[in-house]
Image 1 (tube, rainbow, N blue to C red):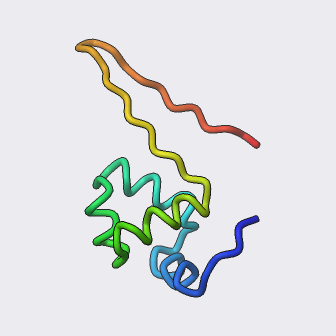
Image 2: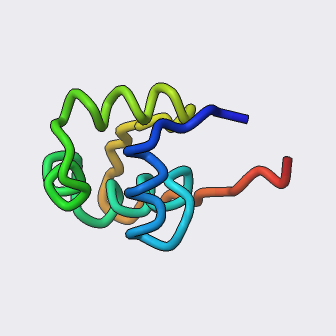
Length: 75
């Protein structure tokens, strides 16, 4: 279990969901800079939070007609 800062808890309360779920969803929908702006954080702070929470960003290039499937771990 990650020990969250007061600011992390305030942002979670505002979003009404855990940062571990909210940040990846926002990154996928809005991108890094816009996610930081919406969370009212610097990009450096967002990077730190992601590191602390174990959130990874992976970039994938797909050829035309290719698809990617994301599977969530049940652990």
